[in-house]
Image (cartoon, rainbow, N blue to C red; front, top):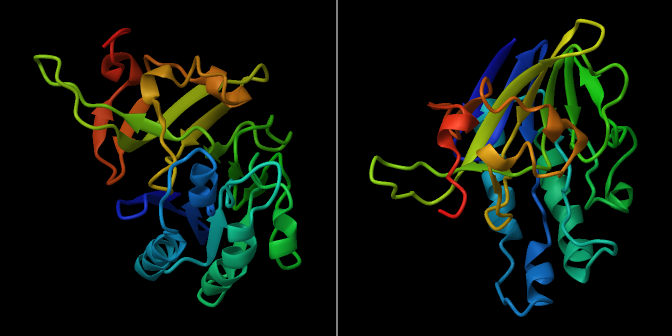
Length: 244
């Protein structure tokens, strides 16, 4: 198995049999959600889709796996999403087969998908690798494997020796834990693709309560990588001190 980090996504290419390009948390339609809170931003869905297509062209995958929260608005589907999602998804299909692991924002996403594209909400194995959005408990067949997870929007704030923090940057967090059966499950939390989605610092994910698997993170032994795959340390050493 080989993992390739695509910085311009951020996106992840998993080579384990097929080449699977993983894009998490697109949150298409986020602009209409922001508008309801008084923040007016022109739709960037076309530009966001173009970034996905650039990742497809770079990675040449056999499958594009959208790892949940393809759409943004809950519990309803916004007019923006009805207007934009069909064309966006078709632009992906025109280049590569797609699959969607539905997230907590994806109620009704099936109406935009073709038969066979919607995966179970509790995830599934593809070529020995588990994929799920991360807001639910994993399917019984996933423990004991590498499980790729979205939903948590991990970011890292790099702090220099005088305590000055750079802007939070998208990050991958890798952690493992031993199942009661003795099997070892490995977790890879992938960053959000959407540039407006925000995030949670990697040092605070374990206690975030965002999903059942966040509690399995070991902050001392976990590893943190930037969007380009650069290793930067463990959550225990990177977490901003409380109050900073």
